[in-house]
Image (cartoon, rainbow over all chains, first blue to last red; front, side):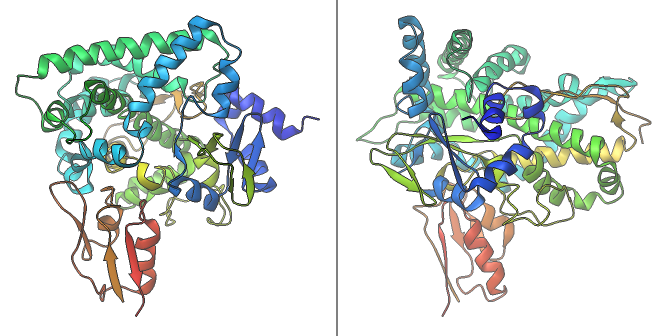
Length: 420
Length: 65
């Protein structure tokens, strides 16, 4: 017998617009059943403590592994060509920083982590502001703009491309490839079109980055790119070039979509349902950093991350979960857990929301967290200061991307109002 | 109180340095934690416990003496 929750979950994983736009009632229903909900071929973890436990558990490897229960099921139903494509896709996937585990993971992460510490990131503030100003400048005279397509998506993408010395003029192409990759996570893999599109995009992106990698070998380049080019690993385990291309792929993909979503979701929610809190930020900009933490908790883009249990049957928060099971850690649900946050389903930018799981937890805690925070603060600072009258264009329909794992507003028409 | 940090576990997220900059810092080579004050005397037990709890790789231990 299918319950209401099961029906809602089916719709959610089919990227039903209503459920992507508001999954929070479903999350509450799930939390009420307990910390872990077994559904179809995976285990959904929705309580804050249980999510932390899973993210911290060394025997739970980083997911989106083809060995997971979810994918075994799908593979058994696909044709040969599509299976081959899927296997190759996962090979690329599992080599990214978030696909690696243990010592290999630590070594790959070390290629980049010092460039992403809060202190180093704070030194980039002027550069980020300059990028914001440059994209915003031609839009200033316009009465109405589409906040995301005309402004927001450019900013984090340019920032990450510049960090890796990639041509910012290619960002349209890169963005399209990256979006296809992002859609793959949590996607309906029994849809062979999804597999084919993702396959084409991933390999076109890798080809592009591979050529770039070759071109940059002998030349002057940024510190981050040089660290990748020169990375050797150690005596026992040299880095294969493929590993490094995968890292670069991940930096490009992870480095901008989620940040764009964070800020777009924040602006949509402040202007849409919480105008009073937007206005508070306009008169008290010192509240912006704290507000960004609360907005991460309330409307941060990462709804779930996938993990894979080890080769032995195990249990999560007292619930039995089999070996090699796909585990979906619902950060979006954990961040609304009433056991941790009072009035959890209410946005309150004045509260202290430290300890949220929007950036994950454990060894794979988001590498770009400090940069994402800094960019969100800079954009909110710019708009509350210069366009305090900004509002969602009357009659505009705010829609979300059809992406289950990364929840993000797709279209946000706004009226800027008088510039200060 | 005594604070102990584990640089093998540290992933350079910098949450501790953000929270309590007089106690924790990050080195410039790898962004790993550097303990500036192993007594944490300038802070309350709650503040130190929060930093310990918030570390994503559980690289901080606050030992109550």
